[in-house]
Amino acid sequence: MEPLAQRPDGLTLLRISTPEQGEPWRAAFAGAYQEVWSEPPYNERFSSEEAGAVLPRALRIPDQITLLAVRDSGVVAGFAMAFPVGSKADVVRDIRGLLPIDETFYFAELGIMEQWRQTGLGKQLIELRLQLIDRTRFTHVILRTSATRNAAYEMYKRLGFEDTGVYTEVASRRNDGSFRTDRRLFMAKVLGG
Ligand SMILES: CC(C)(COP(=O)(O)OP(=O)(O)OC[C@H]1O[C@@H](n2cnc3c(N)ncnc32)[C@H](O)[C@@H]1OP(=O)(O)O)[C@@H](O)C(=O)NCCC(=O)NCCS
Image (tube, rainbow, N blue to C red; front, side):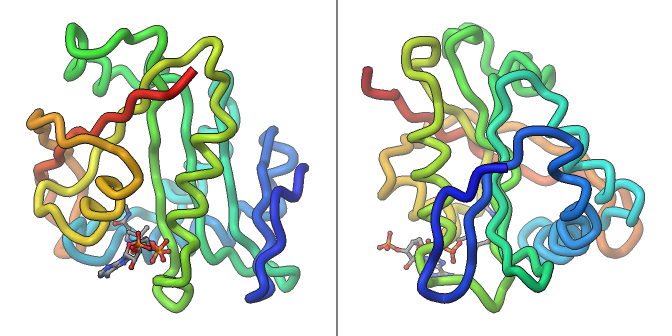
C-alpha cells in the first residue's frame, strides 16, 4: 500500500492496489459509502452487503486506481476510484462513438464525508487520479455527475472537465425503498500527453 500524501488535518491519502490491502478498510469504507450516497441529490440506499462488496470489486478491476483518505484510527474520510471505461459496460453503451473506448478512463465513486468537506480533499482526489493515469495509453477521462449541476459540477468544470450535454439515467434503490432512476450528466476531459 502506497501512502501518497499526508495532510495537515491528519488525513493520509492511500492508494490501495489489491483486495488484500483493501480488507482492513472494507467495513469503514462501506459505512462511508452508504452515508455519502444517501444524501441528496442521490438519496441512494445500499445494504451493508452491497456497500461491503464495492471496495473488493473495484480492486479486482485491471488498471484500477483506488484512493482512500484515512486516519490511523481507522476512519475513512473520503474515497475515489477510477478504471478504464472498458470495464464499465453501461457507460460504454452510452458513450460509444463519442470517445475512444480503449483510450478512456472512467472516474467513479468520489465521496467525502460531510465533516471533511470544503478543505480541498475532493479536488485533491481528482487531481491525484489524473496524475496516476498512464497517459501513454489513455487520452480521455469521463465521469457521470448529477444532472442538477450542483457544487460537484462547478468543481469538475474548474478542473477542466467539459459538459458533454449527454445524459443518462442511473437506476438505484432510494432511501424510501423504491427502485428509481436519477438523471446524470457526462463530463469529459482530454488528457495532455
Ligand atoms: C462533491 C464533493 C466530492 C466535494 O468534496 P470537497 O472535499 O468538499 O471538495 P473540495 O473542498 O476539494 O472543493 C472543491 C471546490 O468545490 C467547491 N465546493 C465544494 N463543495 C461545495 C459546496 N457545497 N458549495 C459550494 N462550493 C463547493 C470548493 O469551494 C472548491 O472550490 P475551488 O475549486 O474554487 O477551490 C463532496 O461534497 C461530496 O462527497 N459530495 C457527495 C457525493 C458527490 O456528490 N460526489 C460527486 C459525484 S460525481
